[in-house]
Length: 169
Image (cartoon, rainbow, N blue to C red):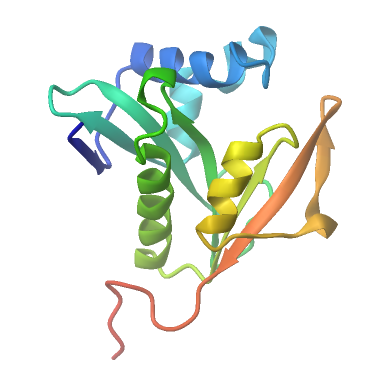
């Protein structure tokens, strides 16, 4: 499957369908919470949406890169970014799309000059945690938190050296 990843826009229905399939149908988010948190306008307001589309333009996955100043940022400080809402459609899993989205979000963070990227995930999301670890993220248990009686595990990746696409004067 040919996949292109980039900061393309997605329709409200595409965003809702993918996040509903990934988070609500799999039991990670309640439908009531999803109605506000996954509302397409609220999702777009978080930050940069990176989409994975196949050769005919079907949305296969998405991820958000959220800057520290965003109202959606929970942990990021100045010079840091967060990764939010990594989602890959069930029919597209196992094809490297999640990894490609994580790599694209890391590249975007580095392009923006971020020193670190943070993310949080639920304890039951074992496959996502394995992906994050294999992409250089490490657990930061002292930053773990609970929200609406759900526990969240925090991971971070610190960038060393000059960010990609940023030149020194």
